Image 1 (cartoon, rainbow, N blue to C red):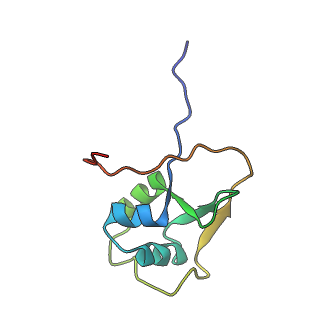
Image 2 (spheres, rainbow, N blue to C red; image 1 turned 180 degrees about the vertical axis):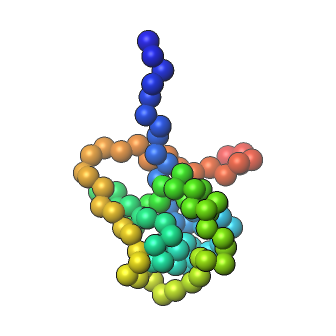
Length: 99
């Protein structure tokens, strides 16, 4: 039996990304409005989610001075509607969390 499995996508909330990056949720919304992170709408849920792997890649690639604040989701925001199919959404748990 081969061990070829598709990697699980880790969709997390804006608040979880903010906690992970050590910034405010408003900052994460600003990053989305500037087009730094794409956001995803999951059918049947409110708000948007972000792919934690994409956040990690973008934060390594873009210096902190590039991610400047702006008002709510703007014309640079990339929000993608996901197809209505069952998705496994994992909650982000910070390292060292003993819950």
